[in-house]
Every structure is written in structure tokens, then in C-alpha cells.
Length: 227
Image (cartoon, rainbow, N blue to C red; front, side, top):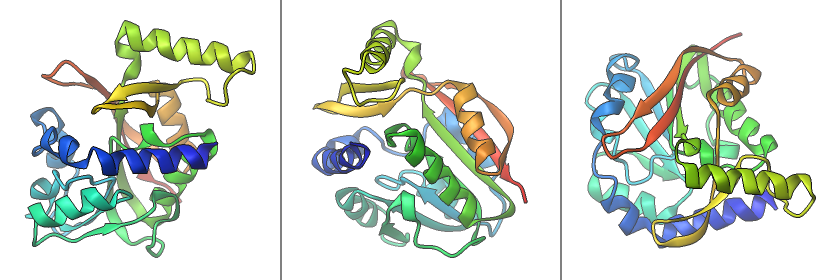
């Protein structure tokens, strides 16, 4: 089930790539502190789930940037938009990099698309693996609990799961998003996200919620790799 969801999310991002890209032009001001505070000169940086490459201009002038995404269409857009950048199609569950390669990994808006506890943990394990010791991971996810309608949907899925009527995990929700029905998201609490990080030897050093001017909210964790 989880592997099918991963493939479905990838397919849907390919379908909505142009539409999604047009809605994600550049970085949002409320995220600036994640770059200004943690990005150091000449850092080797991996942007996991880079999408259309919208964070390239925030990172590349100062550091050695590499962006990856599972969507071939989004990577095509990124290469077209930022021809000097380095972008590649890659699987976050099996990152094609050696251990301890990067000083900093950004995973902005990707983990909430990863189904099952096993694969979410595997994603963070892979991020931790490619980070050098004391390297930093910056992770953000949607705060889906913020809106009553979405919260009710999550609760409904949780009840279905308990009754054995659904293969979804508690906290999973399927939304109409970017014009596509049944788009998979997992709703995190701040506590659940920090726990996942700790299990992957990533020690949270800053965490909280980020409110968007557009009305949405993100949960974020900044964590440092421990030995």
C-alpha cells in the first residue's frame, strides 16, 4: 500500500508540475530565517524534494547546492529555470550519495508526502546518513491540524483505521490539492516530528510553527546529527 502511495504521489506531481511550479515562485519571506541562520559559506547543501528549485537562489550564491526530487517533470522545470544549478531525479528513500557528504540538508514540504511510519523513518535515516557529524537538517511539514475541515478528515481516517476499514495510518489524509483528488498527506504534530528526528540521531535544536501570509502553517524542526 505504501509503495503504491509513493508512486501515486510521484505521478500526481508530474501531472501538476507546471501548475504547482507557478504557485511556488521563489522562497517565502517567513522561511528566510531557515536560510539566514543555518546556511554557512561554502556549505555542501542537499535540497531534498527541491521541486521546481525555488530555493536555489537562497542557497547557491553562498554554498555548494544540489537539488533532488522524485518528479522528473519538476526537475525539468528546475533545470530550465536555473540552468546554472545542479538538479537530479532521485529517491529520498535511497539517496545516491556516500555517507557524511553534506553539511546541511533541507527537506521542505516533503516528509508529509511519505506514507507509513517505516518509510518516514527511513527518509530521516537517509538524511542523517548523508549528513556529516554535527551537520544540520532543516525539516518542514504542513500543519494540517490547523483547519477544522481537515482535522475532521484526519479524525475520520483514524476511526476507519481503528475499525480496520482503511489501510491508512492514523494521521493520514487524502485531499483535493492542485486540482488532483486523493492527494496523500500525513499530518504531523510537533511532538511526532521531533520524535522521528531523534530516532535518526538528529537532535532538535530549534522547532516550532511558521505562519504563512497566505494563511497556512508549517511545523518545522532544525536538528543536528549526533554520533
